[in-house]
Length: 99
Image (tube, rainbow, N blue to C red):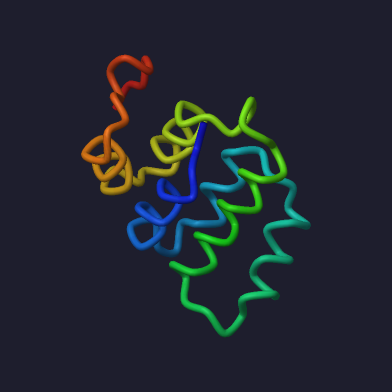
């Protein structure tokens, strides 16, 4: 399952693509917009972090998997974030995740 540590690790690397990552995770648009409004004074890194936390907590550990997160990052073109997760101990090859 995805952890807060994973969210913290990739948030600075996702940047302005944070909404697209959440969309690729099939997170409802209303929740994405709520995060944007709730953290309007925060930078994109904070919005990404809070959005990922909300996704993780809403979906639960059975659905919020590292494979699903890596797939969403790949679809969005966030290769730096994928590399950071890999260095953080997620084996991308064993998760059948293609670059």
